[in-house]
Image (cartoon, rainbow, N blue to C red; front, side, top):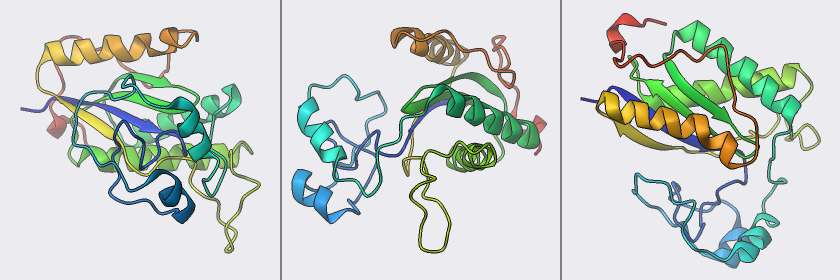
Amino acid sequence: MVLAYHVIFGAYGFWLPNDPRGSWSEFVASYDLFRFAGAATKTTERHSLAHRPHDRERRQRAKELLKYPAVVFNDDQIASIALGFGEMVEKSKYEVYACAIMPEHVHFVLGRYRYEVETMVRLLKAQASHRMLENGRHPLLQWPEADGSLPTPWAENSWKVFLNTAADIARAVRYVENNPLKEGRAMQVWPFVVPFLGTAKPASARRG
């Protein structure tokens, strides 16, 4: 039985739909990007592909063909993202066992909920975007759409692993907690994260 999820989602431009290591996408919306790097590299792999060998210089050149600049969150934007996440966690009563907000991607360990994890991620992204906009920190403020709305600063999809045992959850929590350290950043402590004590609260006990 699924008890929790390890979820990773990226900032816009972090993981291209035709990344040679594989992607979560089924199509490439940008013609220039399609012409440069080919079709989407859809994969169903459930482990991280980040360390697969690839041509880093070519990947960087591909990013230059995106419609908007690839998003890299600064520390102020990360602070606003965390506020947005906290607002959604409080509103919906998510159980969050770990969270790492990095400049180009986010890790979560989320307890199972009454609706699908994809919906949880969508709502977390939306509230984080709203909070950045309210704080005047949206990274794509200079690229409004024709109707005045702003492009999303997030990649479209997410990568997830189902965690079926307490040991799985504990291992994922350690991985996420250590993620900032691996990139030379300080360990992150967010008020919306609760300690995993060896058992996951049933989804039926958490009503939004």
